[in-house]
Image (cartoon, rainbow over all chains, first blue to last red; front, top):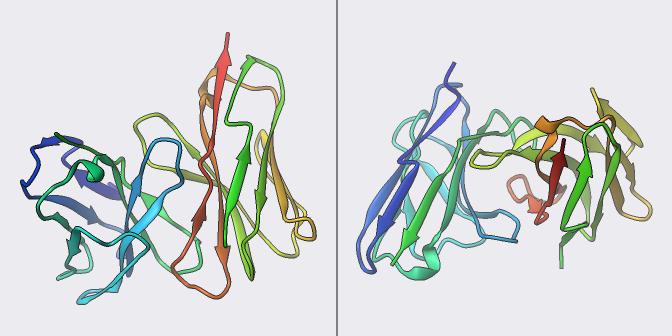
Length: 113
Length: 113
């Protein structure tokens, strides 16, 4: 049982480039989330999804886009990368809401130079 | 403003010793409080979850306490092991949002042999 799988694990982008962070879960969870973790700060919610075809903004959505075409996949798209997007990105899924049963991926460390 | 503050920021103890990590929150209305363990380069993993009516919850050598009146929680680790070296994060879920979690910045714990 793989849980939540994120790719790539590391990436260096140049300013203005674009990329997609991939996230797949095999637990049939309806709810999926993208967070970013900056040094010395708590995780911040970027986008979340309550099911296939339904997404919504979190606390820090600017500069990002998401899609949810299937229950399993929840990719995060960065357009026109900026140094402020240098961070560690975590994808998570849960069977319900309210902070219960979250499973996190192992993260993607992104550096924008 | 909903906030979660953790102390200390970092802590170094010898293997076999006990330690207590603190969490103060201003989140209202309150639904539940979780403690997560995050190993370096990995996603957070849940240790305990506590609701308003619960004062203490244990998970092996980890014991969490909650005082909902003073809005404080602690995580006590007994007989520390080298594998306990990690960041420990306090997360509070407000009851007026299904998707928002308020994350603390974490306490980085280092266990020395």
